[in-house]
Amino acid sequence: LTGAGRGFCSGQDLRERPAAAQPSYLESLRQRYNPVIMRLATVEKPVLAAVNGVAAGAGCSLALAGDLRIASEQASFIQVFARVGLVPDSGSTYFLPRLVGLGKAFEMAYLAEPVDAQEALRLGLVNRVVPAEQLMAATMEVARRLAAGPTRAFGLTKRALRYALRAPLEDVLAYEAYLQEVAGATADHREGVAAFLEKRPPRFTGT
Image (tube, rainbow, N blue to C red; front, side):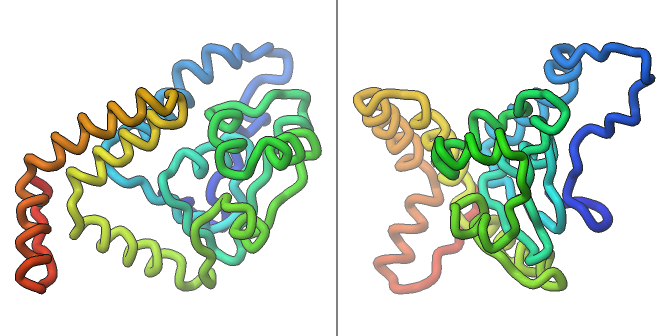
């Protein structure tokens, strides 16, 4: 995921709605925003966000829903909801405290101050920061590496990590064992073991 132009995504444009109209935020979130966030979080493929500029409001939420975030030096993240008397949405209240901790999540939500790329890296909000002109090349390098990897195992790993965010340890251990049985039956696992024993790079096929 990346943005067209200078920004990643500035969220909803408040000028889109008629001045006299009272929008139904409930319906807008249920129908437009939440399905996208759920799809990003549950699709069994790695999702990379190449954050090329400002990620604000629901645009920040969109970046947070990715599995990995690679940021341009020009990127910034801001929870702008409080500026207009709203609550962080589109998954921000779920993802943000898990990435940066509860205290910093409160600070970002309450004060609505921008977090620049280097601070985002320090906080764990992004995985890497690169020069602006190298953003897409760096992101595609990671994407190609993932695409050449054991993609079935990546999908199962994503499923396991998401599950572990909401489950007790006993259940997580049981779920890991179940998913490991599934992964252990794949051709990629057999290929990985063979490559290790033969001291060569593995040739994964995603099966």
